[in-house]
Picture 1 (cartoon, rainbow, N blue to C red):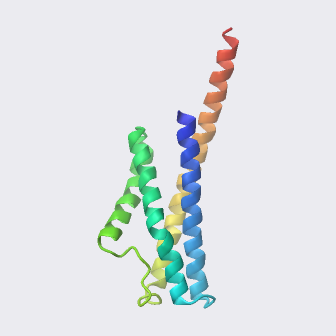
Picture 2 (tube, one colour):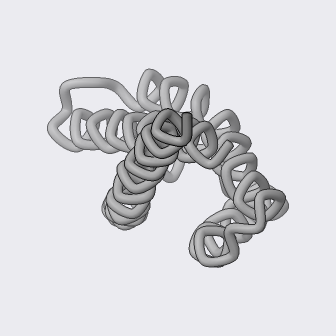
Picture 3 (tube, helix red, strand yellow):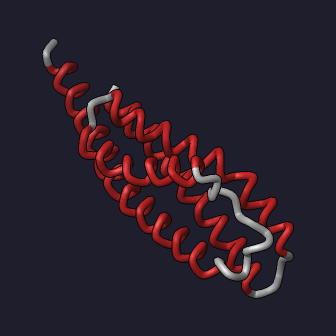
Length: 144
């Protein structure tokens, strides 16, 4: 069961990193004038809500499975996402795009760093659970 949890967390965090990196690339393209504002807004706004939901599900999974450290590590970002959603500031605004471009890029860079740190912890725990699973299976074989 532990192995399934960490494998699922691994792929979820990988998807969250890819989503955040994609948003960062789109914002960089906007800054370099490779893409127009409307395309940027539509591409980013299309994946904001699914990212918030997936990150909230990951946080809830850690709570349900009693992994308190991981839950406490992911809950601040989940609360921040909820706050942005309730204030209706979660979508990329076309009219304010260039004024808040640097702030949006910084926010996504910090989020990418957070997801990378989470990825390192999850990868370690996944490797540890694989080792435990294989060593337990080997011990079970030697019982007979």
